[in-house]
Image (tube, rainbow, N blue to C red; front, side):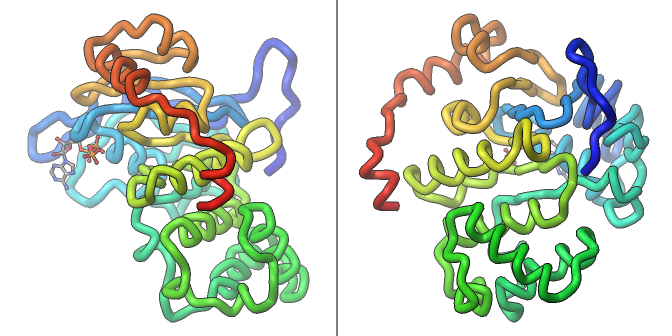
Length: 276
Ligand SMILES: Nc1ncnc2c1ncn2[C@@H]1O[C@H](COP(=O)(O)OP(=O)(O)OP(=O)(O)O)[C@@H](O)[C@H]1O
């Protein structure tokens, strides 16, 4: 998407959240959430199970389930979207979602090619042949075979890691300025996780869409993001550059996470990554 001209001092905000509060049946689940993402920034939303990560992601992507009461402000590319469902949002305020459940995200009855071509035609305005060429280019960009035979493949014939790469390609095909990835690698083995996270980091950022990576795994976050928001009991308790967070974690939860991440740290050998 086109970005307004940026000055060197101030970069345009892709996502701005202020005083976000979400409640269900009188129970406040998110309170006073506020943060913003610059165009092309890669940020991780980190928190323990039940801290409110998925609800925050749902408020941003426009899929909060019925029955939740929301207040505050969520602006995407300058548009207020908090109470707008995903399909009703203005074109440049759409947010692509990559989720953990690739089986549900992809239709098993429709070939990979047809699923990629559809958003390229709808959101990119491409004709049939141009969309097919763009689909092949997207497959190449996520390290999948860019061949006519692969376009005809069914999602059921792919591994979990390959399906997640297709889902990343689909998110890129929607040409949004922001991708929210909610625990995108939880279902994958450790080596495939590392490859998919690096890919997600490489395909977003300065030359692509901004990324909000939702995870409970600090080691995973470090592979794709340069800034971390820590969520605890429905509130943001830290908002720091990744390296600062590792050097001086402030919140108790963050200190525990950093200790675990450093204890587990084991660089993947290139041969392991190639083999996955
Ligand atoms: N449909 C729902 N009805 C009632 N409460 C809900 C619902 N969905 C989430 N909650 C509550 O909201 C809080 C935050 O849930 P959320 O799913 O955002 O947490 P999370 O950080 O994503 O956790 P996890 O990592 O386990 O997915 C939790 O206390 C949860 O029980």
